[in-house]
Image (cartoon, rainbow, N blue to C red; front, side, top):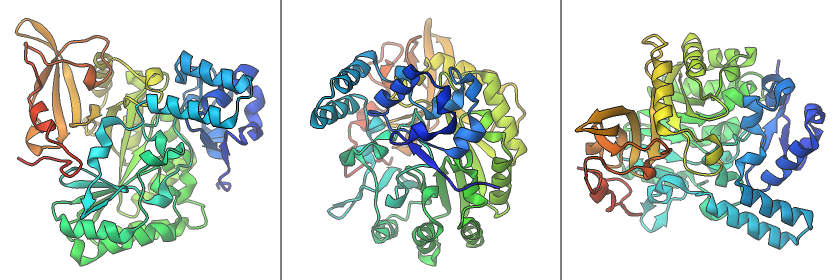
Amino acid sequence: MGKPIKSYTLHNYRTIPPISLLSGEMLRDIEIVGKVLPFKTNNYVVNELINWDQIDTDPIFTLNFPRREMLEKRHYAAIENLVDRQADKKILDAKIQQIRLALNPNPAGQDHNVPYLGQIKLKGIQHKYPETILFFPSQGQTCHAYCSFCFRWPQFSGMSELKFAMKETDLLLSYLRLHKEVTDILFTGGDPMVMNAATLVAYIQPLLAPEFSHLRSIRIGTKSLSYWPYRYLTDTDSDEIIRLFEKIVRSGKNLSIQAHFNHPRELATDAVTQAITRIRSTGAQIRTQSPLLHHINDQPELWAQMWRRQVDLGCIPYYMFIVRDTGSKHYFEIPLERCWQIFRKAYRQVSGLCRTVRGPSMSDHAGKIQVLGVQEAKGEKVFVLRFIQGRNPAWVDIPFFAKYDPKATWFNQLQPAFGEEKFFFEEQRGKITDTKPFLFE
């Protein structure tokens, strides 16, 4: 069975056994880029997922290890110059912070999602859509390994002013008592499954009380099945985790594990198969999601393979996302039209059981926007779009149109079609404030 987890960061990554396979240039790139973007991996990823014979192109290596191209040339050169001349730490740290702030560390207006309880701003909660809140337990603001595309990279970079986290369960419970419209809570991070079982129980147990009967679903967003499936098998408190999942289901609430799988190889080990089986035995659902990533999974055959394997294991394909406009996006991004083409080519290869997946979807400030296709209408080539979810529920499922732009990779690069000055929702979107993060009809 599994070994105890061993983590590798920028401080000790040279102790990874296969690291001798890397060239001096690759080692230097890890140290330069890793000063700006967070880096962490572990022995499961290193020993069971990465193909060290093909590290130049290996997708799992790229998911975990910094590459030179993940920073813009000017940013790489600036850090390299300071490192080479052994600049004072304060000067280096100031440049690192300057570059991080230029990488859009807070995408999609997340500050507007943070609600208030009286005069208290609840930095560990986001409430973007009426029925769902995100909760960031402070002990879960790290991961078993860091994805190089992660849109929450500021959580792990010492940018405390941009970090979402909260330890006080009482504030969460007080907020839920006042907001009976909330039916779903998503524990997120970081990764909640880095917490020990006792801490996770302390957060979840109170939510099972009768006074929170309006809370119908508990979701846990996690990459642990990909990066440390032994969390559910051989960790010292694995059995306690499984008992907690059973208790949630017995209470009558739906438990959904929102599992992140970015590549079919993450679904190929015996450990992940056993972990999925054990979780499902509790009555929990496992829903799967991933962004569409250049260099990682930008082939329709890979997505079809992932969705089929997920269904084989009893999981529910849920979302294909478009990579967010933050951090190393320029390295991973794909034009919107190609995202749609990859989705539809994968979608048509699979049976109806795999077609629970939705996408490609952008998590914009206004909501989750799906690219439905590219069409000719009124003599104009346009993107056809719709809201899967919106700050105003009335926006959901209304088709709307944007001018075709072959280079666009994100919604903010699009313009309304047919001579319109604004998209239909923009006037209402302007009314969003810190104290009114979502809009009702």
